Length: 523
View 1: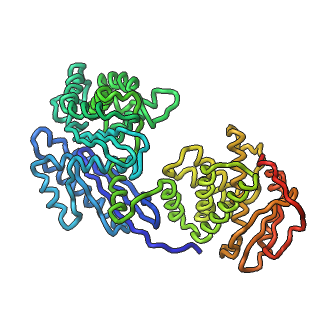
View 2: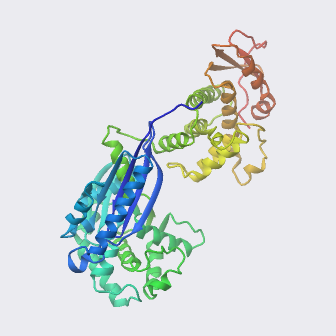
View 3: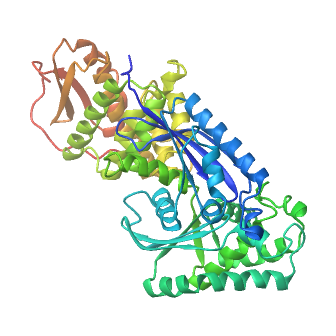
């Protein structure tokens, strides 16, 4: 039976100038948390603000309603705490206290300054450790644009600029619901220059090697640029792509823009100022290509919550794997027994020359061992297939597409029929990668069998080579006969994979063979 845990659940509410976002997170042990629910409502809190200096009553009422509902949803999902932060619109509004007072007894709404907003955004995008190389981050919000330069967990430069998609859409006296003239578009670009000249000078003097973007505006621009190119990859866009896109969009009405592939439904009337900010900042900062992250303030709030409670460092890979395992109600004791034995077999077989896989494959094997049985949440029958599907669809953080695919295959092959080198599921995969997957899958299969009864009775397995045979000697607190019988069934596949026979014995047993030699590498 799976080990019971009591994870903490917290609701995080981001009250922005354009939208209010909800992220409900469950913090399992030894993880940075996993999202269990998300929601968003476009309130346009800043729509009236940039003409009058105040938030109008209908916007306040709608904001209070949405925040109250989001707080209740969080508590219904088990949240002990609800954290609500308000950003630019609330910072600048003369009557922001009306919202705070209206939410008294519902949730404590904290209005945070621009630099704190920027810090949390950088934390959400990069995590507490990264990035390894000096990187600039642009977050184009509704009322402000945050600019951060970060390297190896240190914020080298932070600024919050008075420009945003909603601010410019409703504060520059330009009707963005219809076509925007070239003159009006250039006025937006000049407004960006005026508000950013100090930041531009500082950024140019500091320098950077990589550029990242976040926020709904940046995601929409990336989607639209990707739709116009062959690779359809929305993880980035270039300045050369953005300029012609904006020239086309500004000549359309908001209704016409809705038909543009990649355009968000609630963004058609504010995309022109948002895009103008992105285009001019990229030009002024010297950014030709910018990568786009779906993370931002909410994820920063989530990570900051853990850091404030004493957690000092997180591995995104280990955290996302553990979070998925907990959500799938995994048998922690069995998974960790299998992981321990699989890694031991990996290290020993490498020393013996059975394979030459590196630390990256060792890490993938470790993660695969933790997740190998998660498909049992749905059904034990074909659970390895279900585990593969869950892994491939879970959007695990810190892994590339290829790594996720490889983990899925390693887990798929730990149970039932073992694949040959020409299995159709390896089609299109480099031969050395397919061979590595088979090696890891065999080691996982052996480790799983060693804990056949899920009680940890087999404490370890020691490998040695004797002539053309690999002897696996089991150390167990109980009779290991059934584990040995199961391991013997793997002998034909083991022989085809490594070119040597496998002989499992108990600690007191004997392989019955003599002198050793170094075997051929896995083929």
